[in-house]
Length: 408
Image (cartoon, rainbow, N blue to C red; front, side):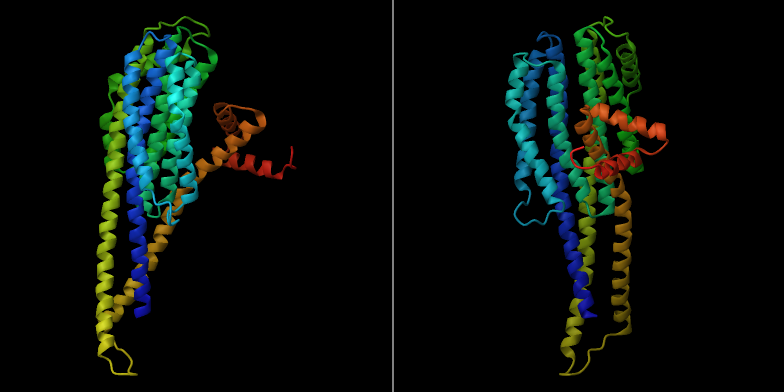
């Protein structure tokens, strides 16, 4: 019995270590979210600046650059706190690889901003550069979600990641629409991209809703402004349904940008709620685990005292109440770990689906020379034609690629 209890105590100590690591990871997710929000705003301002040939938002762009640099310093400070020496971080190889990619991308920001300042880029080229950096930051959040070993925390991270991803698509839509209006005319490729971004937002926010509790959903509902939403829908119809090459009012670029910004800023308040909820959840789970550890250690100390009172060679006897208590703790721990494992499998299925779809998209992009948007549309069209789920089609694409001879 003593040996069993020793292992239970060791297991609880490991659990506390994992929860403390998750708490540190949640702090990283928070600062990453603030940098992403700042970069999203810089991207939108840069699009108006470039689309208007430097006439609009010149001063605002410089101010936003300073805000982004401050947010980036906070992220770098959190990266420095990551434990890279012991290898104890779950998914550490993938997480640290994502961090390395982000660090490289941050190093390229000054050159990107200089090219924007001199108007050496088109709005689309600038958007692509910002999207790549933000995607790298969101990949860090994704790996954090995939590293969670507590199902309740895992659900909170999945909800947060999908909300941040949906907000990023909303930011891309802001940049796309701002560029279209600022250019003074509609074009078919931009309109198609615009509609794709709307659909992508809806998909992410649906997953967010599926993994969020009632309090978070209530906060999300309270943050929404019906007038802002109505204005955005009106401007969407103007930009998305205009005939190709039709003239648009360039002045609408600022109206569109400000409307979308109010919506995205409201999303940031929801994101802050999600981050605060995640931190409280980590703190509560750590406190609970520590209390349970103290209970187990107290029983272990009682056993040690009883064992010390037995004569040499004499068997140690425990009272029936203590025997039942230890047996109950062993059974409860086994049941709890099994329940956690089952729930984690359910939560991670969503993350696995994303990984599979991303791999299938990458395969189509490489073999058919498609853009990411075109690859995703191809997968969705295949799913609709075959009346199958997107994940099933993505798995079939990957399986077919593996079956083909090398070099094909």
